[in-house]
Image 1 (cartoon, each protein chain N blue to C red):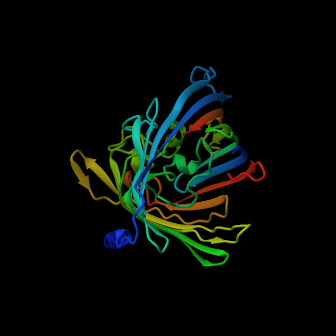
Image 2: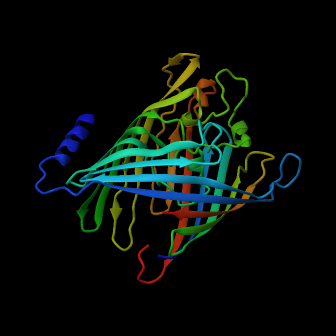
Image 3: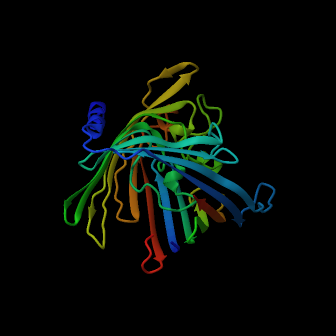
Length: 304
Length: 68
């Protein structure tokens, strides 16, 4: 894959027949503020939590373009770290280079989102998949993406990705009740309190993730997009200080499912990295789903 | 350009090894003005029906986003 990528880059920059346009650099700034009003919640003292306000995040995104190449760098910062396992309240969300070929292919390398199913449902708070570390999860890797018309009403779209290493950060979040229900037992050797996702665990690292994602589109005014994805990775478990043991703990995640506009089903084998580590048994299938509907109004004649 | 979006999302998971299910619903309205600002009002309910003594987590949140 690397050789193909280098060849594509070389061809994309070769034989300039005319003076190329100058490089461009476009900055974007996004600022999100959040106000929270708990409804019916009570804390340990039986009191209702107070409303809160915060700068949820500020995003600085730089987009550079030169001929067929594009570079994206997005830095995010918050008042507080995103999650308890976040190393800092400032982090790289995305950082990659994208080279487009004349055939309509895109070759990308860097800190990229893994693509399984619906990338995001446009909700603000998030969905269960995101809170389990499955959505908007950037890792270090390379990607080939395409969007090719193969018939007047059919487009073939795909991503083929390989991730060398997880970056230790995603949206994984599990309240205590969930961790307890899944068998989080403080005191077990190697336990760190984050038991479901390798990005959140300092004792686990995820490597060699392969993602194959096919999502063709059929139709023009009414578009139906079935979506199929497969993902597999290896988890390394550090059993003692300084010694990383190649211990496959059953996080071979297989995600397959459909997205038809607003619906998705994911089946995951081995989700829950505690299974092999604690000897609780063989990994089993878990099922994620996500569905949604939306209606967008725009003034007649306005693009959105 | 101004636009208004109504949306309702639901998601869930059933874990294969433990008797645990988890659901999250989040209806929302998002209003974008002609300028760089948009506003979202989102209600979220998150619950685990098979976990005893686990309350619903209900929140109403508003988010202002400015994009330049």
